[in-house]
Length: 138
Image 1 (cartoon, rainbow, N blue to C red):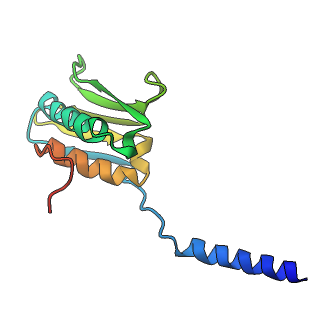
Image 2: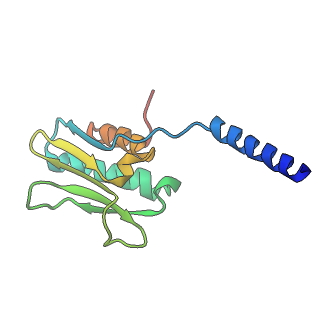
Image 3: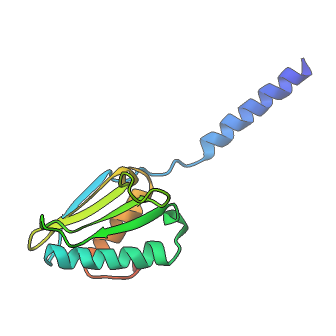
């Protein structure tokens, strides 16, 4: 009987602790916005900043991924892909592309639906606007 009481008390404690954790805010899912530059110039800025801030800096959030820029596009849609590091030919987990002059920038993929998507959104908007910094300035 005493073991049941202890077990029940532990279960209640675990449920209470789980309830105290704040859930991470889900990401935006997708992103679309305008840029003041042409598509290629915009995506060059985004690709350079993404490479420097997410990958060359060894950011732990992007460690499981690899950047695959595809800026020379005959379709007029230069893009960058974020793919699994162990499977560079695998399905992209993030696609960021731009089209037109001035460019319309879009970002979508599974990473945009997670809490990480909020950071990705702010980074891409900042970089597309010409601010190459790795963090938002207050």
